[in-house]
Length: 262
Image 1: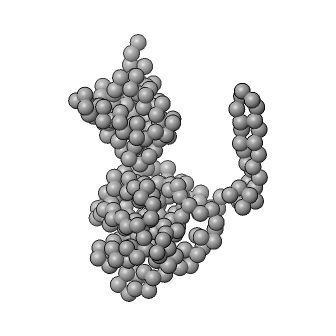
Image 2: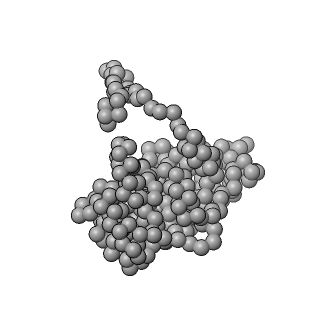
Image 3: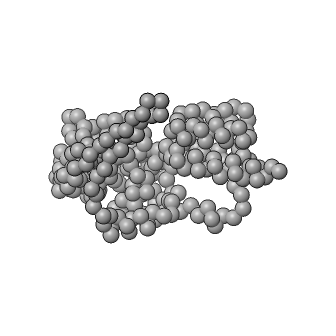
């Protein structure tokens, strides 16, 4: 992939010390449109304001569908899932979703064929379609837009870019979370687990082990302590696979816990 993009990759290895893999690429400067998206995504959306929307996910990989569902359902979207383009057309005819997210590489009917087909059906052509792909080639984006897609989303999926696309296409209004700096005071330390558990969650987040973090959440429930807002925040982050945000959250709670105990 690096070579296809005109780059080079190297490795330096020392016995007993380890190895360093690195690569270099010539990349274009970010366009003004991307800078505008970055400025608009400084605030984090927490849900849809007003009328809800239904989204159909078409992807042959179950894990990809789960990732989209985990991002969209907490925001208030109704999510339907199918595994290929043919099933997607049938589901779209029955459900008439507000928007479709479609993978490009699928068996039976790929994403490009699906987009062209749905845009030819009078009853369905008004439904906006976001094409999604892990491909690094710009022609995949260009081909999907030329076929009639209303947007393009790369994988792994950036949650902020996803919500920006949904806002632009569906003309949504969002509720936003309050900035941490505006809340004042420490986190809800009275409802915080012991420091040993915070450190364990932090360690699992650094390793990216979401399943173990969920097990720790179950342990909290088993012992009869939900820890209020702490557990709600952690579950929401785990459902969206936001391991870096979980690690930062644990750092904040551990710092506050230590400051609370002389």
